[in-house]
Amino acid sequence: QALKEFIAESSKECLVFTIKFCEEFLNENISDQEKESFIKSYTEIYFPAIDLTPLQWLKKVITEIKEAI
Image (cartoon, rainbow, N blue to C red; front, side, top):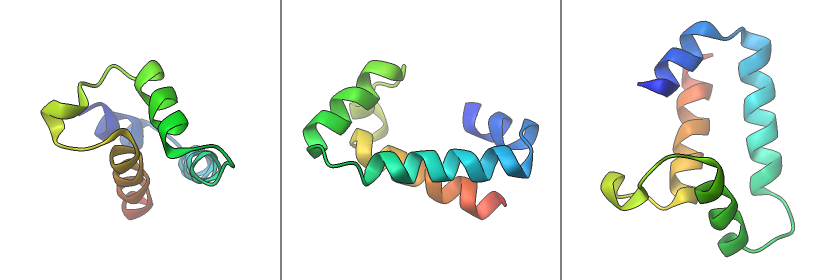
């Protein structure tokens, strides 16, 4: 629900920036474990409840934003 609201309330430029920022994060030269730890630290999501790892969740978010543009 929060993602839908973010997409609805954000400009196209903001959404494009968000995609770019997230993709740059995914391409960072750090381990997947470090990326997942970072995502867990800065989100309020209980990942086992949504059957996704933090990286799977972020990739899904990117895809949903791209589809909305």
